Length: 141
Length: 141
DNA sequence: ATATAACTTGGAGTCAGCTCCAAGTCAATC
DNA sequence: GATTGACTTGGAGCTGACTCCAAGTTATAT
Image (cartoon, rainbow over all chains, first blue to last red; front, side):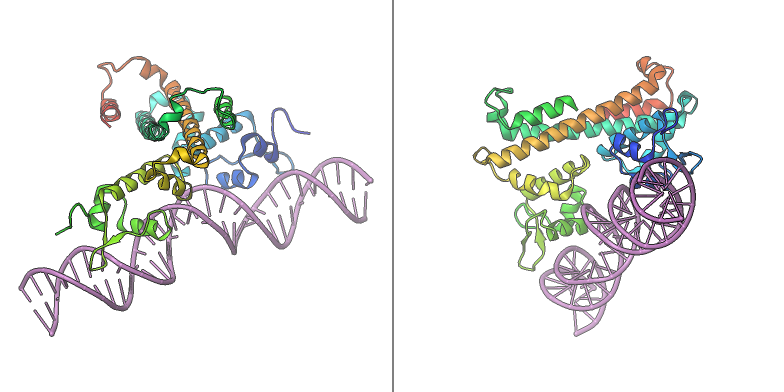
């Protein structure tokens, strides 16, 4: 049905968790490059494209806007970063923003933990019932 | 000019980095409680309010929506969390989301670092010229 | 050959989260 | 008492990120 290692937009949507409409939208705004097409004009996606989309989903979770992602995504295909000091600097800037964000998040976790004191000091005891689902969800994902 | 420990909306905006319009908007949508008023009907804000707004800014940076924040903010004033199992569970859920988010962010930092290998493996050598500004910017902030 | 299903396009609509504006109030200064 | 400045209100407008829709194409199954 599908060509060598090429997924349909539907399969891609399933794989990445990004809807078909959204994938087309990302192409429209230039976040994704124009998709490769089969003879019948249908879009096809390869493992590299899937990886890019998963990266988009990941960056989005961290609060990065689609516009901010564009230069970042161009880099993921390009390995000559060392030759472009500007791109190198941009990556460093992104990195520092993210490190900052991690610190903010850690503060919130600390805030929550301080509110929870009495309970969380008992590190994952057998008495926890409903919460174990959450804990395993964190570990598996 | 101002009453005991009470700031005007303008001063509050300066302190929190949230615009006056946005503060009024947060009140309008019920994210902030109706502000205390002076005789002249002007809003005044106290240290607790400033703290809440700073918490909002912090949560926002982590990608939390204003709707998601509402129950969270109610809690910040309420110390009887342990008496409400539902709220306790909600806090745990938030915490796990954030822990997830930190993991995603860490993956991206790792991704960047892997792209940078050649440069970052040489731990801050004298040969780096323009990039030192960035490195110090990361450390100081 | 006809129906079904999976896609295609362009464009309109939706929602969150602001951001801006006009018109009005109120207190202090000239 | 007129002006200035800091606020007030209600509501309109805007941007980003989808999400939905109608109408059309193409391939396969009956």
